[in-house]
Image (cartoon, rainbow, N blue to C red; front, side, top):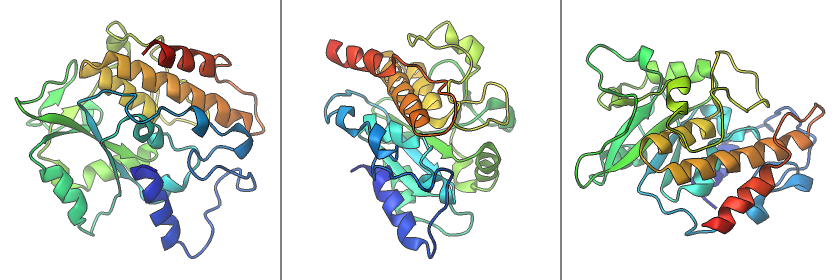
Length: 253
C-alpha cells in the first residue's frame, strides 16, 4: 500500500455514509479502484522498478481520494516518494508542513502560469533544483474548480515557485508518444488542453529530465484509462494496446 491507498482508507473512516460515486454498484478492487474483473494490480510496477530523484505531494480535495476515477494514485504506483494529504483551508496539518520543510526537498507547485503573481517564479521549460535538493512536485488534485480554490486559499504554498507548461510547446521535447490533448475521457474537462493529474505528472517528470519515467507514467495511465472504461456503460475511447505497450516498456528496463 502507498500514500494514496492509506489516505483513501482514512477518508472512508471519516464518512458516516457511503460515498456514492458513479458506478457505485460495481464491485471494485480496494487498491486500483477498478472493477474487480479489470483489476490491474497484478501488472503494477514492482518496488524498485522506477529509479527517480523526484517526489510528489498530492494535496487532495476532500472526496477526490474516494473517486475511483482519480488518477493521482497512478503517480504513487510509480514514484516511491509520493505523499498524499487531504486539503483544508482552515486546519493546519503538521505532517504536511513537515514534508514541505524537509531540507532534502525543493517544493514546486504545479499550476498554470497565468495564475501566478508578478513576483512568482515560474519554471515553464525545465525544472532545475538547487545543489543537494530533490524536487517535490505539489499537485492540487481535484476538479478544475476545486484546484483553483486550493491554489487561492493555501497561503503556505505562496512562497514556492510554480511549474507550468504549454502542452503544444512541450510536445516537441517529449519522448512519450502522446499529443497535446488529454487522453482522459472518463471525466468531462472544463478547459481546453486540460489533463488528468497523472498526465500532468508525466509531463513534469519530462521537464525535470526523467523522460523514461514520464513515458512509463503515461503508459501506466493508458492502462488505467482503458481498463476503467471497460467497466462502464460507454464506448471505450482508450488505447486497446495499452497493456501491451506498457509491458513492452517494462521488459526493456
